[in-house]
Amino acid sequence: MSNAVIIIQILFITIGMIVLGMALNYILGLRKEALREMRKKAKNLQERIKNAQLLGDYQLMAQTQKESVQFMKLMMKKQLIPLCLRCVIFISIFAVLGFIFSDYKKGLLPFPLLIFGNGWVAIYIIFSISISLIIYGVKRLYRKITG
Image (cartoon, rainbow, N blue to C red; front, side, top):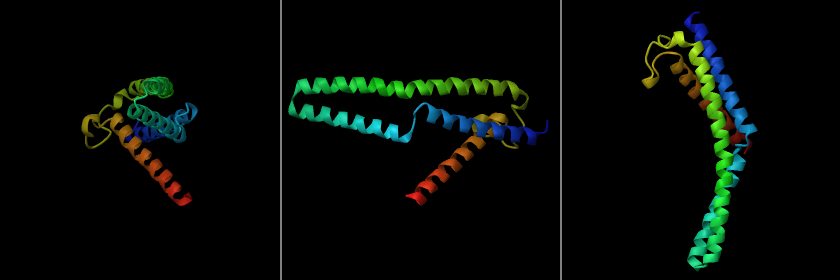
């Protein structure tokens, strides 16, 4: 196949991977509102611990620290399980892509891209960063317009 066809295939694979990542974020509950709420609760717990230390109330401090430990366990579970699942999915997809595009490890770009070379990985990185920045810009513009 010609290099242009391979580059277009990698473009569509990149778009698919970005959409898959966004869908996994939505399905697994990694929404901005939920993360913001978790940070707010963590800050509240820190303030309560600080106030208990200032008051010298060791019973309140122990109770607040116990709540904090429980909250951290919940927070880690809600963040680490989706992260590990995404890593397994994306690493396996990259393994398959590496097998499929093994003939195109070099020579797709006329220049090397830092540590990624000039093969299919470099093109994937370029497309991924470009598309992600476009999506970020569109979301930010939409928020600015709608308020």
